[in-house]
Length: 573
Image (tube, rainbow, N blue to C red):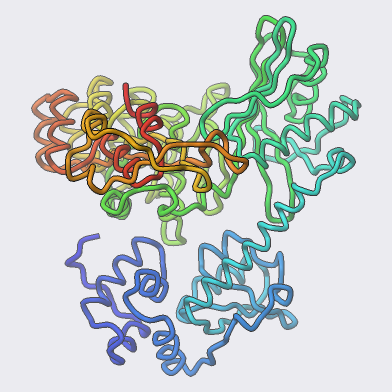
């Protein structure tokens, strides 16, 4: 959003200016930034330390004649549970307080946020009434309320005994997205319990994928955790057909067909508000069917941009590009580099009632309310390009294309970006510069690429060092210079190395994003139209101040977030 745009001042903003809590330029900038980040003015001011939350709350209470409630005096046991979807609580920063008859009272820090009241009213069927709460206390109350729900979910996982493994609420999801009860064609209780235990263990361990693999004399199950595969168990080899049959029944596949790959989905409901989806694929191999399950956790789409690991300047570039009225944002990287989560995070920020958002995906990995998601299927002739053509006849504001794979899709996406739409998509390339040359090599005219692409993000995921056991790495200055650090970096670097403990996997726990975020500047546009190759583009981007993946990775290691070994693993070609 252009910094020169004058935002209309709300009643809250005017009162804060009158009380000298903020001045008018601060109010204008805060309103613009809050709008970009999908926050209320009050939340933005307090979260960024611009104004004191208690002063704001008292001013608002006086302005609107609203009583101020101290939510710290309320216990979580007294708050209504399971009435409001946690996604709505996070999205609108509103806390359910109590219910009286057909009226639900919700705590907010900005009583002028009528959208929160309207959407909660729509989803719950209850009349809503806002009660003013100081922003800091509200944030703490929401965190505690949601943590209790997460704790209940975690307790259910932790306390599942062998008997409970037979009674998990598991459903298949058909191609139309409808839930189907899993039939009991494979009536084999030990197999049912074993498969359910593997799924639960994978969720507990934070795995992203589960591999069931048959070989001539052995059978193994592996989890991919923090991007690395490791073996977890070796069941008897003669169980391979029964395990495959059970998994195929769970995902509504044809258990009699073993010669061709099949796709399916499983939904495991672990609470009224929390479900985990599994995307299932079978592959006929020499000694039976290998089955891989991708774990799809909807909460990953609600992480928020701050949790992804963008540096401040990179985050600003991303947010600014997303809030432009038109253009194309491309996210690039190898499989498993977190492209989908980046796109979903962007869509979640843009997902407001004022925007019409449509996405074409193969497959739809995470369902997002408010976004029109289309499952691309070549079997029925629904391709990315066909979906895109349909989107353009549906009055879109934002379009997401899961992947640009061919010239036809690229041409339609470019056209959409040039005609007043924000387009987000992915490509499988190694760097931002290579993304531009890939589009040119597909056959897109250089002028169209230069004028439609506004931002390119190349990314990788590195394993995050465990905070409990990581220790300082004593590396010679010469080694650090050879890795790419300069003298100033070495003076302040806090490089650590993995050790390993009972709280992590070999010294690592979780992952951190490493990004190259390049805005297509007028200079880069000229280079593209002049036919410059990826090396020329990369050099120009670096001169313009955009860090490449290697430099971004070295900064993450210097901050002690990951190790140099991890940076080398994910950024060296």
